[in-house]
Image (cartoon, rainbow, N blue to C red):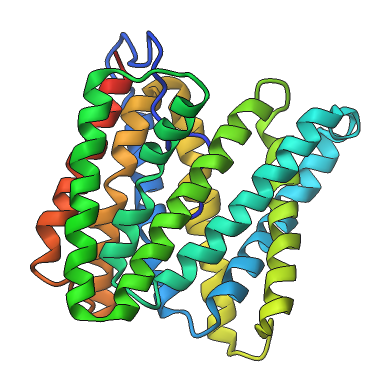
Length: 308
């Protein structure tokens, strides 16, 4: 999951979520580039000859290195003036993002790219459930979509269990990663009510890097010692998934609307599966394909329900 998708993964159940005018062609092209960058994430992680936790750590360190100078130059006053509550929430969001990475990226080494990507994109479902715990009611179509998607989850995990217990463990990690991402996005949405995206992202990614460093040290994960090609792949991951993928989706959500953007991001699953098949020769089991379709159909229903 890809990382996580900070600004667009949860459809907003508010009026006016769908733009009243024809969708801008330029923004649709930018959205297509964004989906392409995000779709490359899972296959690239699978292909990189470095520990998954180390990839997650360096991806965030590199992101901070890119965003840091700009944020300190243009948002220094804002960073100094962030309130205590907003700062604590941003740090908590960063910690949850670290958990998301620490669960999802290793899952790609245990189960197929198609399964891991489909399961991690259940983030909107977990978000709806968490919001329900705080008294926010969802439309009936959203709940119908959740039932369809979770039916797909059950089918997919059953298929992977028939393959190996390791594949089932990978499915479980990807599903838990989706839950962690839901908490991360809910906290981030609260912070961004008073803090700019740039300032929030810097604090969040820096926290994520620190937490992942602690996890790597505790797990004994080496943070260096692999080939130059692996370092280039990590840098490519940061550029494609982080800067092009999520940054462009954050840019176009203002004009295309959260429902259109979040529904389009679901194309990450077939996109990642196709790239993994053509590049890595990793074809998902035929029995898993109906389950993936059920998950995507459920998420589309959730996105459509969020527009009403």
